[in-house]
Structure formats: structure tokens, C-alpha cells
Image (cartoon, rainbow, N blue to C red; front, side, top):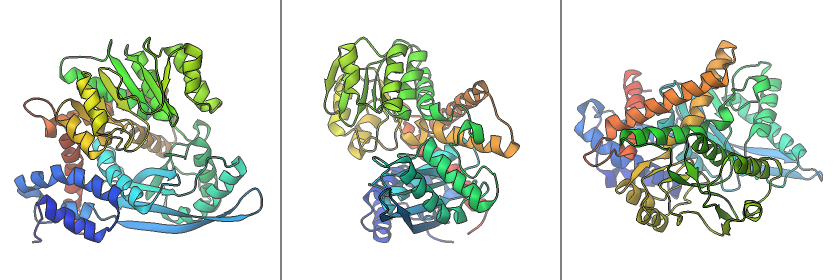
Length: 446
């Protein structure tokens, strides 16, 4: 039987040699391995088959060129990838990202995280991620359509409802999904659930747009209930003004909380009176329709606008919903000093490693693989509806989303319960690992 490495430094040294220079991937694996390796050392059932070593090696990485023609008739070329990480518990599932910062390392980090996140939902979905260094900002609809069609011309060989089901991510919304799915239909001569995040008129699910933002608040509600508290009446700081942040704000308002902030790349607004439904409607119109800057909110409602990030604002709850590594050690300390009770990540790994350490040891802290799993959960529900050729009501989808977030919370508590507080990071890492590891063992060495 193979020897299992349970020493973190030795494990990480080997991983870095195999994946040189991929800092994002290294950080993601280190965060998981620091909890899973001690668990393996204490549980003989998970020893001897190099389970975590196998889980840190993607099943395959597909890299390809995407050639397209811009509006001026110039031929352009970008690079794209699909990282199919692990399909031990179901078809590969994970988003596609269009952004100039996309690299193989970033997609490996995201695909690795996705494997654990999908496992926590309890749905039969494996982990994957894809994307391109194409930047859709400033591009016309025609340019984006031609890029998406060119990308799918290559990608369609590797995806399908029982193989790999991509979704949207940063830079990939309903427009891009529509263009890619249209090309998939053209090439495959089929209409199947090969992608999620589709328009409701052609197989998408109601509630998908809201799912990540609503889900992170549902998870926070479970965290607060676990300590005999609640969300109603609590103040909250939220970063971002994109899809996740907008619907995080919406659900906070619906559950009686008082959100104080929203942000974009130019800075953040602080509204001491709180963002209510009317003000949120203004932000939705500003960001989703007019594509304006968040400062317009401050000008309209007479509140403060500042450059930077909102983590100096005193609040009970925090929801980083903007981007990766947006909250560092100093930000975490500021939140703690201001009396923060709990933080739930809406974005993927928005807290740096140092920030995570501080938060984990001082407040209730939920990592994104648990708290922002609502988006992929409803994507999984979209797959189910596509397979059955049915459409569920928003009430049915929301009910199932709440149930899934409650089950994720229970799994985190099961593996992360401690003397002072639940360690949601450990609970999510081990809870996600055990389901995938059990499948790997039962399917043999493949």
C-alpha cells in the first residue's frame, strides 16, 4: 500500500516542485491541506491511497488558442483553458472566467476550490474551472459574440451534460453564456443542459442570478442561529456592487439587517442610515443598466464616498463580495477591533491568508467554499430541471437553496465544532474532502 504523506511542509514542498510559480494554486492547496492532513493522520480509513495527492492533480488541463476578428477587421488571438479537476462524485462543474488576469494557476486554484465546494452541496457535481485572458470590457456585442463562438468551437469537444457543465463567472454573464450555448447547439446538433446560467427562456433556472448573494446571507443566518442570535437588527458591511453584492444586500434588507456599504473599483459608499429597498433599486439601475460608478449613490443620497475598501466601518457582520484578496491582515484587525461578530465570504478567497488566520481565531468566519456555494447549488438545480425537462417556481428553487445552505452549515459544524466556536474553515475542508475521498476509494485507482 502506498505511503501517505501527512506532514504539511513535506506535502507542500512536493506540490510546489510539481507546480512551479503557481502561487494562487499553492495558497489554495495549503489552506485545505493544513486541515485535511491532520485529519488523515488521525483516520486510518483515509490513509494509504494518496488521496489528497491525487486530489491536487487535475484530471486534465485543456489549453487552446482562441482566434477572432475585431470590429476593425483585425485578427486577434487569446489563450483559453479548461481545468477538469475531479469528477469522482459527478460531471465536472465550474464557471468560465473572462479577465486579463486569468492564468493556469488561477484556474487551478479555482477548480481545486470548486471540487470541495461542489462536494459540500451534496449534489452530484465534480470540480472544474475554465476561462480566457480575454477582457470583455470595452468590446462590442459583435466582438464578444465572435470570441465566444470561436472559443466554443474548440471547447465543445470536452463538455456535455454528463461530462462537464460550465457556467458563468467574472466577465461571463447571461450574454456570454447565451453566445456560447448557441454555438454549442450549432456544433453538437443537440439541445441539452451542457451549460448553466442560461436565460430562463431557453432552459435557465429562476433564482440563479440571486443565488450566490442570497445563499451567503442564508449561511450567515445559520451561523448566527448556532450561537442563539440572528440577523435582524444587525449592521453589515458589504463590498462590491456586482451580482453577488447586489443580492447579498437584497436578502440582508429582506431579513431585517441594516447594510451600510457598497463599493466598486473606484471606492465605497458609507450610508449610516442604511441601504433600503429604494436605495438598492437605485444601485441596481446604476450598475446593471447604466454601468455607472458607485459615487453617484453618494451624490444622490448625501452620504460619504471614499477611495479604498469599506473594512474600517464599524459593523456586526461583514460580507466581502467583490474579488480575490480584497481583505488583508490590517483590514481584518480593523473589523475585529470594531466589534465584528461574523464574516461570510461572498467572493472566492477574498481574504488573504493572514486575514483568514486572524478572523478564524477571533470571530465566526465562513470560507467561500461553504458560504458562497449557493450559486453552484442553483446551477446544479438547473441541471436537474434540464434533465427532467421541467421548470420550477422561484419558491421551489429558493426553498431548495435554503435547505442546501442549511445542510452545508451542518456539515461544517460536524467537522469544525470547537470549544469556543465552530471552525468553519476546518469543517468545510474536511466535510468537502470526505465525500470526494470516499468516492475515490470506492471507484479504485483510476
